[in-house]
Image (cartoon, rainbow, N blue to C red; front, side, top):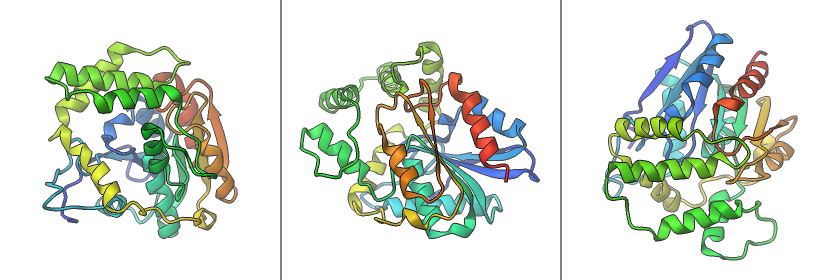
Length: 292
């Protein structure tokens, strides 16, 4: 199962400090915006982004014949680092990519120069189960992570009940609607830019439906996340959340509480995506955090 091809690309000089960008579940590496990547490279960083297995231009599998778990998706992080000759790197992670980054920082601390998690949840918090209970209308046990916003729950309940899109146009329209939801309500939503991005996502995917394998991987090993280990993180950690986060509201503060010395930054107006309005602030914070 370790033979799945992983697509990656890098920017900047080989001699610059390396940043590995780790995107969230079912997401291609190009969701790290080109302009944002450009700000990091202009700041003197060697930046690498990649497509998770079963997304974008990376290899896809027949999950029934070759099942895998999120342990394999996490181990792909090491494979990408090894392929680019990196003994260690600064990890900058978004959403479920943040779970991977936290796990790597606990498991292989010598490979993590610093950790930045954006719009993520604390490792071991069972965020996937919280979302599923919210979608099913089930009560959350005491001590659970905060639920997603009501508009998030309503959107995905409707999506779960809807028939699959009939063609490329309908599929892309649905992807734009999802991006609009995740964008949040504070900043203007650029629908033309969203369409260009989602057309690019659609057209570069080997098999767009293969992203569903990430859900199957989660169900194959629901206890993938170790519990009660974040105090072991040694890497300097920056935790970033948007003020209008719809998917994981308030989760970043919990991460920052559990990792010794972690610093929390709230970005005004940001939701669960990385729109142009926040690139300057995000890049400045990450360049400062990775300067050591």
